[in-house]
Image: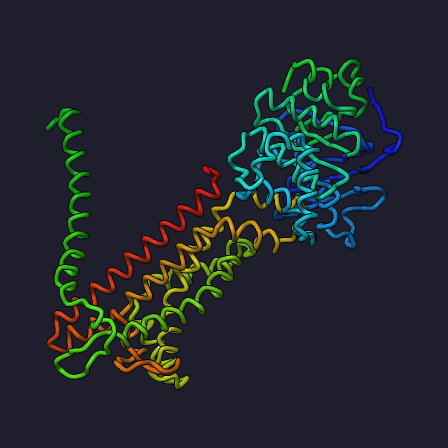
Length: 264
Length: 283
């Protein structure tokens, strides 16, 4: 099921021998994987195995936590993102993130979407309007909110708020979108809408999604990485491969136990 | 041992809680009511627009007093808010948790509990005497800034800290710099709380008497510059009551003071309700 769009061939993110520490605590140990372009890569595994910590490495969101230390090499299109020469603001423009709980700003729908572009120096009203409309269309939200762009984003439903957050990320025109359990706060109908949206976005964007939901990983992802905790609570990558292979023919006994629901 | 049935203890508890509420409201009503009843008969446009006369009679109006109050409060806020907000942002967003910042916080706690006359003595020694600002609006305002900084910092720091962490993450993840995150997300979201802090300080600047007694002087003349002395409404109340026979005039001035504070509070509440409703999206 690993379908690559012709224009999008090749690896996007390359993670090699990465260790992550919070103070003295090692949260991730020796993680290596290649994340393909224009595909959905799902990160699965039991609670506390470092899934969220892992995707927060990819846009350096861990940086804002005190005492964090990263070893190893992470490259975006061949550029090491933890290099001193890399501007973290530029990196986050290229690698956007959607969080577990919808977190729109207490502003209007329009101002939420225009937030990123404005911070990056776009102030022309007409240009911003185009960006907002395009992003909302891309996030399949335009038809529901086109008459309430001036209203507070907090008045939208949870599912709409999460798609708004996706639109807000799209407005910055990233190349990679990280999603940290984007549906865990949503009902099944809203979840399906987000999943459809993800499949559509995967034509043009590289998506990495953390999910607790095995069915969701099986439904939407092209690649799947199974993380687990070792005895000392550090997260390790147990198995990584095409989703079809991971779910039908896992090579590792622990992967099989997890996806068949024997633990976790 | 005496056992009280649950029904009786419920009644007693209700009586106690109601009693507390009723007494509080009564005190408020009696104090404000007394001042208004005593003061309002003397209130007229003439009273507001004529300057006070000196002397033991304590006649005249309060025009220069109103002008001094406005100047003093204005100058205080203009100096206070930028400093206080800067410190609040530092403490809420930048300050690492170490001995230095803990001692800053401790200092703020202590300052908040120091009686205002102590600030007055400090202002007298530093601004009035050492810096030769004399008894003036400038000395008074600078002293008020010292007095009110702890309130301003703590209240706005709380407001900034109350902004959900998710907003910070969202802004940073969109490629905002730290300052963009602070100025475009945190401060607008915390604005109702910051406005509350400013109003709180305006109120305290208006009501403050002791520390102004030794820094602002007591001149009844119209202020002509920042280095003019003067008296605020509350200081005028003090002078009329203690040094003249015009107790009614003191009451009338007090009524003006109370009405001013009521008006400020009402406007603030209206503004912050409207602002919050807009933000919370109940529209």
